[in-house]
Length: 125
Image 1 (cartoon, helix red, strand yellow):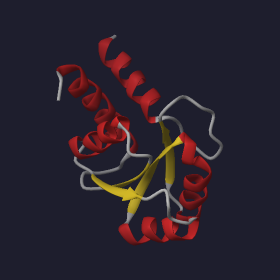
Image 2 (cartoon, helix red, strand yellow):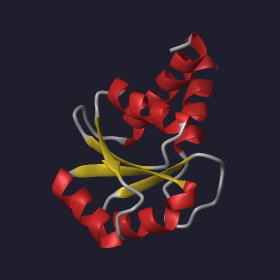
Image 3 (cartoon, helix red, strand yellow):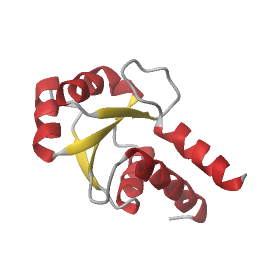
């Protein structure tokens, strides 16, 4: 991992710690297999949480059951899958944060990358 990538992962990990109540929490991750998803997965682990991978091929009911059965406390969802993710998170009664390109996704508690940038700015100044 390059130094720049590691800095990004650490910043995302700080954001994960902010939205997740405790060490060992399970964070559900619904996103396509991109480099960003690998950074997010590393950030979840660096924050001391466990990643619960959610397949975009699952139905809303299947995702909701996975969220409940796994004990996930938060879902991170790529904006392209927000319809699926927001319905499942709402049904499971957990918070939802988007990842990926900026968007104003309905049902989202915010964007993980925005929180990471805000925390980094606060730490600097």
